[in-house]
Image (cartoon, rainbow, N blue to C red; front, side):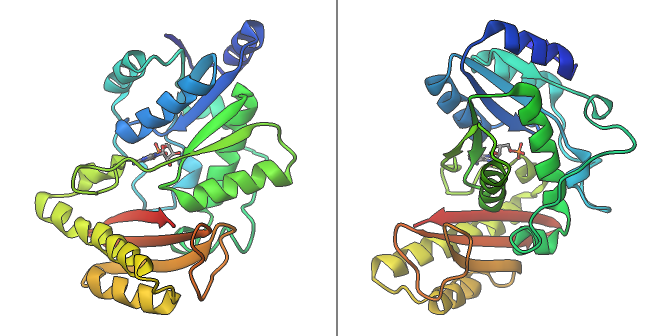
Amino acid sequence: MKIFSNPQELKIYLKEIDKTVGFVPTMGALHEGHISLVKKAKEQNEVVVVSIFVNPTQFLKGEDFEKYPRKDEADKQICKLSGVDVLFFPQAEDIYTDDEVSLNAPRIRGFVLEGNSRPSHFDGVLTVVMKLLNIVNPTRAYFGKKDAQQLNLISLMVKQLFMSVEIVPVDTVREKDGLALSSRNVYLSSPQRKEALKIVSSLHSAGIMVSKNILNSELITNEMRKILAPLEISYVEILNRDFQKIEILEIGNSVILVEAKVGVTRLLDNIWL
Ligand code: AMP
């Protein structure tokens, strides 16, 4: 496995090998969720590039940038064992200068849900993803459905800015009890981890209601809120795949999204129905 921190050197290397490239951008502290993206990328491309970069511009003041889990050595081993060909491991100064061109997330779709709790978060996400895509110039880039709004906004960016990369969504990987894997799960104490399962139960019960043909969004989200109590809920929403609110759930074209705080940790999850 080759490791690069310099963007220009990586660009030259990838240009010279001239193969199809699958790209998996991450913030490290790798788990099975990340690895499933790598597996998919390996199936579909000749070369797999993973980036590990805890992007400062997507964290708001007072968020967990400083204490975000960093496991550089373990991550390198995981990448090697997963068959990653190239690891891009830049420092902030390799990516940013002190006077920057940047992208703005769309003023509506970028400032609802996660963007409402974390205004300007998606400006940072889109800016760094654009930079990483320009460095790697991949054939395909892989993003988890767990971060559904991020996936939607990145797909929108690629379409609206006429970029050539194919964005490939990947299903959420879960623990045996259903909790979605997340690098932030390490913040949870063991009672909090149990509390976090309310998020899974709320989505499960939404799934059951839909299977009984109860499709009214308000009925479903009210039931979910009951199950989530007493967690502090940031949002519970039913949207279509264009991320617009819908009063009646459309099977095959809907996403149910939850964000709730467990202690001080914000957890998000969703199901695609
Ligand atoms: P992160 O390191 O949290 O920025 O995540 C990097 C990529 O992995 C993003 O595309 C995430 O959506 C994806 N990801 C994170 N958790 C999971 C999971 N449990 N299952 C599948 N993909 C995930």
